[in-house]
Image (cartoon, rainbow, N blue to C red; front, side, top):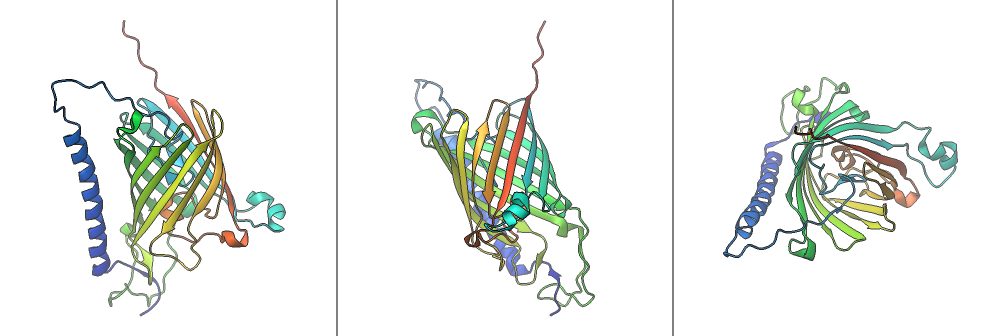
Length: 321
């Protein structure tokens, strides 16, 4: 078998289809629970539930997604930046915290469709990737823990626009005798998440997220699907300041230089801005890349410095005459 890039085989497609069924079953159960348990079974109307506010300040927690969506009639512009890899050695000063090294940058624009749904488009210089994402808030946490969690469904679809590297003429699709050739579908990566969060107190909020990523093109010996479990949270130490943290565990498709992503930082939020600065052992931005590529060995003191910033805008309501 010649080396090269390969297309999914039938067994991998069956496994992928099973995982999609599991995700669909989970989502269906959430909707059914909301329908049946949300019905008024008595003639006495209960007071309207009060939703928990500011579960998270922004739509993203370092690399991970949160259950926060854009407010109705709002827009957002985001800048995400990851500087080059440095270590606890001379490179820390020589490379000026990684500022002198090549960086990964993403610009994004988002807009609310409703008070539960938003869409966002972005462009990242890594592989010259263009992506579109959407998040829908299925369940909102209420005061008194009557509904103890918020649940959101998220999807990001990205397309690589950078030219693929050349492949030798002797390369074949895996487990077949068909000569390999690039296809437009090879550029796509799909990322689906079910995000669960809970604000446990005025200071502490935690989240847990199962993540399913599917790549149409992978290297020999790797699977097209990647399963990750991510967790994290924030701890407020001031009126608008928080410590933020996250950790993700890759279940499969672990490259030889892949280390479970771990990040720690601080967040500052205002009415219209969210700013985060942090260190991480992964220098990518899109989760499609974070969980499917190599990372730094934090045990050797290697890390990346990065920041996320998000500016929100609101559409003015027209006055009725």
